[in-house]
Length: 205
Image 1: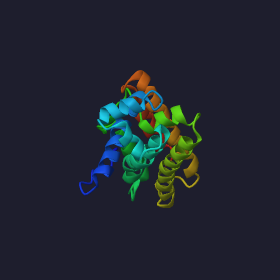
Image 2: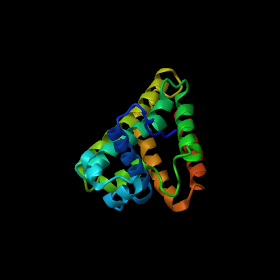
Image 3: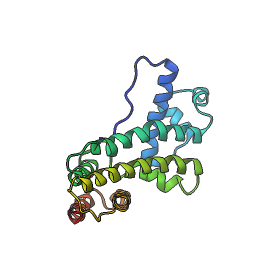
Image 4: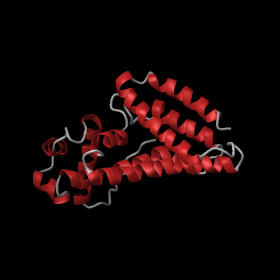
């Protein structure tokens, strides 16, 4: 499940304000995009002063990078990496993770796609710092899938000639693609993708 960092009620008031800004900004940016979301809109939604916003963040870019590190990265960790940890059957684990992400996770809305994929599409071509931060998340997710596949090769669930790195990259790219198509076609395209993913994974045995 995609999850946000839990609120810590022992936080100082300033830390709670900062987390609230990031949380509200994340929600708005998921729906509208980073460039279409203004600082004034974030301030109005969080009901903080402009001075409070700039106390915590130098500018909008600084806030966006903090949002990636503190909300997006932990969320993708929980949604993709954690479900694959110590999996017994790697192919089942990968399929089940994708099935949950696409059809059952309460956070994701097909109309808005995936927040990580959206930011990759929107910001990687225009901002090197965003690209670097998003690349790190992507590599961690791809790496978790690769490790899971390699474990499957070693325990005999997959053929020995399977290239775990290439397959993991392909799976990540296909996830990015179906999330974008879901924004266009709606959630009806997800079961089609999952059916073909299952057939593809079965061919790795």
